[in-house]
Length: 335
Length: 165
Image (cartoon, rainbow over all chains, first blue to last red):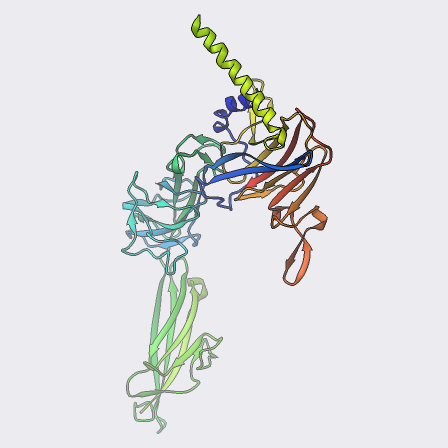
């Protein structure tokens, strides 16, 4: 009678399983795996010892549907007005325990910003390899446009980079922001935690919505920046006779004034200048805003490189208009 | 009418058969019928919104779900069985839940390797040259040794829980 009671309920188990511990991080045992158990018993009757085995219970691992979308690493992606093909890089993680495709939805009509980016056509690309593969995450010609209904399948625990491509309207002005969100939903289904899609998991097992509710959304933001970096180079010649003529062994001191003009920040700026032919760099002559920079490649911002091309390089970092003029100086002698 | 008689006879034969096997089992073999059942907790909300948790047969489970196994040993012979010992390995891909093994009237021991059994305080693991107590999650085998003899018609119950990895 007891076993009847259980078998009557066994069909109900698919309706709502009580999900145990939070398992958002762990992918878990692969969907479709059978979990078998057989007990044995040893006993003695009179003087005879015997062994018996139980039936084998078999539980199948159901497919759990879990997905995470991660926003671009850059909080704001700098763009210029009227530029096409501006990329936001998202990351898609299949946290489930079975292979799953995810519907990807781009939304550019997001509140709290100044303009709506315009989706390019196509607007969503996916990298073909894992996001942890060497060199992953670069938007190039190898990325494949995502076709709705034919999204790539990600294996359990696999991650891919997804590139959202938008055009920036020409009407925007410096300081404007424009937001895009990328939503991913498990193709099998999403909804409330514990919701079951009977028979739709790997190998006909059930698919169950996990703690992420099998969908996720992340936001990227464009920032219109009209910053231009200018460099003005001047020179002063001092010859060995006390004059200003470019004679052999005369010294030429170059001054380069670097300015950022406009709004925003020019990140990672660097200045490079080749030593003119027929001249030789004066050792130790490199300065930034009057402060000497050693010629060696070391902790300070400057370096003189003799090869392959004789040149000076100065890292200027992030430049803003408010930061004012950066003045670089170095000297050469005429051979 | 003849058909009905046949039915009756068939049923009688079945009963006789089962008695027969029971009688045959007096030699110990087959004296204990061992059954295993896997169940999960299912939350049911009634019309009044009251939640109750019932156990239902585990069919398909997702990682993180706790499964309860109940093993019953039923003495179908006319003589008592002595030294009834139930062994159950923690199933593959599952992690034993600490303190979940239960069996009225039994001494419960565990094993990491299936050879050396002991109580939790007796089980140790060598790690980085040091000895430490084994964690419940490392138990791979469970053994219930029932202290009293199992009387004819009686059932001994062993139970444990494990979480799907």
